[in-house]
Amino acid sequence: MKYSFVLAALAALADAALRFGCSTVSIQRLDPVVEPGNSPSAHLHQIVGGNAFAAEMKGDIGEQGTCTTCVFSEDFSNYWTAVLFFKHENGTYKRVPIMANDALPAGISGGMTIYYTQQDFNSNGNKFIRAFPPGFRMTVGSPTQGADGLTKHKGLRFTCLDNKSTRFPEIDDFPKKPCKGGIMTEHHFPACWNGKDLDSPDHQAHMYDTQPTGFAAGAACPASHPVRMPQLAYETLWDTAQFANMWPKDGSNPFVFSYGNQSGHAYGTHADYMFGWKGDSLQKAMNSSCMFNACENGKPLKSQSVAAMNACQAKKVVNDNLDGWLTALPGMT
Ligand SMILES: *[C@@H]1O[C@H](CO)[C@@H](O)[C@H](O)[C@H]1NC(C)=O
Ligand SMILES: *[C@@H]1O[C@H](CO)[C@@H](O)[C@H](O)[C@H]1NC(C)=O
Ligand SMILES: *[C@@H]1O[C@H](CO)[C@@H](O)[C@H](O)[C@H]1NC(C)=O
Ligand SMILES: *[C@@H]1O[C@H](CO)[C@@H](O)[C@H](O)[C@H]1NC(C)=O
Image (cartoon, rainbow, N blue to C red; front, side):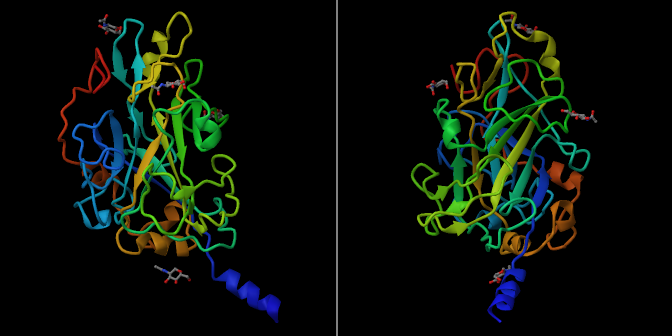
């Protein structure tokens, strides 16, 4: 009796996994999570998602803006990371373009691949996965962290690409040689919430990470952070092809992120998230059993064309020069 009751209860839980593309909505020096109101913010970001993205964002982001660059047209969230630059031996910098992932529909302009998984790709681990609430925000990693940051954040990784499908090995710093197919940066966020705070002073203390590494099953959430949420992850593919013949003669790493750490290491890699799905759309997806693009076309999520994604842009309020060879990184003089 008791056994069959347990089975019935578990059967009610679902095992959805979202993986979808979002094109670039802006490349701009703004950071509404870490530096709200600062225009410009300290360093440059590449952003995808809703077009309400601005220096300061309050309240329910799902109700702000008029379009999104994501495949799922009810997802007005914003997702962002630092921007990768190539530093030439002559001391000037050039922004590394972002290319679309080949697992996604053709024609997406730059952008990122976004994942919302449960315990892992195939299971929710028999736990209810609670969608983020309106107003929720968080960051992972920090521009000032050293090598120890990667012990703390096991989901911050790099892949030296042979082609767009290369996924292994994952390394915890910039590749030490030119990569034929570009460089992929990966940012996995923690998935255990304290159940109370939409944010915290460091934008991280309200969350707790139990994932052993990248796309792996998350262990049980601790009592301090008991609420299991989706495991959010970003993949960004940087097109380094034009720099292949400019690798420094002394063998040093020529890549630098927009936050300007010149150590040759990428330990300060970080990412930001501002929840903005409309209504209960993300919860509906987490309650369903759809996987990847099978969640589109109203099953259960509304979706849109690549042309509609690419047509959406956030307002440009900071006018840094981002093209060509620059004498300094934007904001770093
Ligand atoms: C630095 O190198 C790039 C690439 O060859 C070149 O286009 C640029 O003019 C150089 N800048 C300076 C200041 O030498
Ligand atoms: C730059 O990165 C190095 C290597 O990770 C680290 O030791 C140093 O503290 C960082 N500098 C700043 C200003 O964050
Ligand atoms: C892409 O690279 C991986 C190794 O990183 C290799 O296994 C795979 O066959 C390559 N795919 C194509 C289409 O070349
Ligand atoms: C998701 O599932 C929970 C638990 O079964 C239920 O309470 C909630 O109403 C569902 N939400 C949606 C949007 O389907």
